[in-house]
Image 1 (cartoon, rainbow, N blue to C red):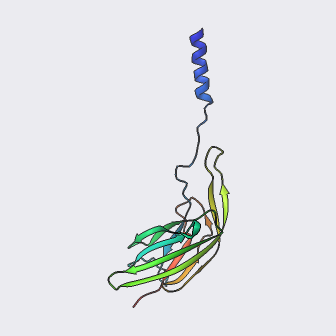
Image 2: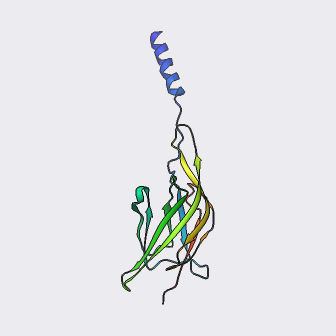
Image 3: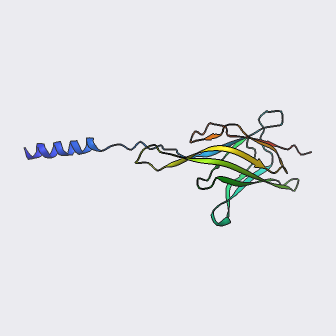
Length: 162
């Protein structure tokens, strides 16, 4: 009888444990696509690196030496209403190096999957401003940044170099 009670208690304990259903991939990043001025997809021939200003004014490299890319992802802060990004375009063959600054304003929205999971922050893009040394234009195509990695958030149109 004692074994039966012990076995029943163990089975009840196993059944009582809840499985935590936290998302495996919960990164929240903005997805940038690169286009020609005519709207067709473009692969960069220049090397692209992106820095951002983080806490205490320190620069942080968030994208390093993308070459031949037609799209890329950049993480977004969840503690600042504006992200300041420095896009550095470099072509070693032409000794070409240009830096554009991009200011992305956004609202941060806490997102809870479950009380057992960490909070993630989604974002609502409100505006984008940029310098135009090598970037011809940068357009918000979808203002809702979530953990859906298939959504296009920005369209980047670089200037054509002669």
